[in-house]
Image (cartoon, rainbow, N blue to C red; front, side):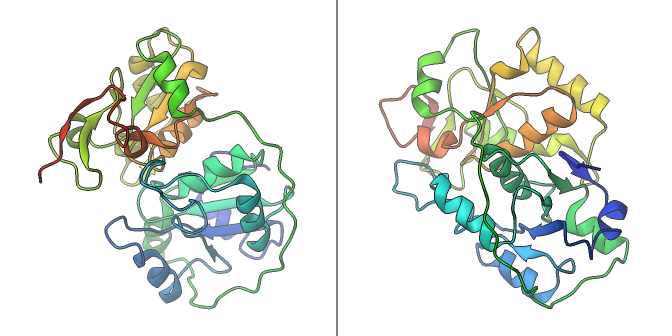
Length: 283
């Protein structure tokens, strides 16, 4: 069976020793970037490989390309090969934040044409709550070659700017309501959002750290989409990370084909010439 959105803890437990499966630990803390690796070293799901948001799933920020710009595709493909991932593997990604970071790896694998990737529903907290096995042993990984088939599942700032106010694009902002409204901004120099964007906090896709049912998710997103086709939806957030969880939620709901704006607000607000519903951050 191919898993392309979510996989349960019980299903993963049956495949811990399956060489066709690769488990990726994507734990991360925006306030403490080293916390994820420390947590991984202390205890992780057996055979899981650690994937770092900053070094594995992002390029270096320049101040103009957002806080977590996408890495060059060839570099990312090499990273996947180093992790022992090729096009034949079933990949399972997990974190401790409701998929906020693991969904970035899920989306990026699809970006390069690999759809046999799923999030562990409930993540590491559910795995621990069920008293399933953990390990501090670092796995031995055989490097492989990842052959990509790049997909057109993202848009850039120019695309967003060209389509602002048009019916052929619906922007959905995944940040908390407070950050979307601009009342707080802990990470970026400007508070606010892209004009025309509507807010759907990614945490609203969850119920006790697990994803809501496909029917519940579809109902919630259809209230936002109205007559807009899913293919015309562009997801944004602070730096193109948590927005991936909204992409995933729409896929779970059967609303397929939405896109990601990877640069998101952190890239958008770096250019004062771009239109913004914003105010200078003073906190």
